[in-house]
Amino acid sequence: MKNGTNAFKSAVDKVQSDVQAVVNGAKSDFPNESSALETSVNGLTSAAKQLASNPSAAAIAQVVRNVSAVSTAAKNFATATSSKCS
Image (cartoon, rainbow, N blue to C red; front, top):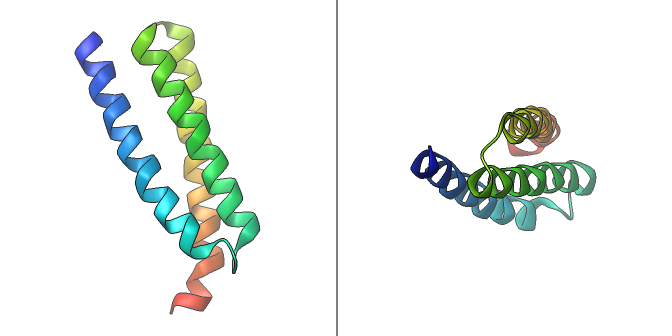
């Protein structure tokens, strides 16, 4: 399980890096959506670190909640930016 959680954490770290680049480019035009996306990904990153260091049912549940929050924030960001990017 340990290698699996570390691989997951690495994938989440990559997502965080990619999201940070997007947020940096969009925060002046879409501050609320950018902030929500950044906050949700930061929460997922923290949950992934916790899961990697201490795998447990509670840690998995926290990851699931954070993935849901990232999904919602990403959808809201996409909706907000779609009119300006099309």
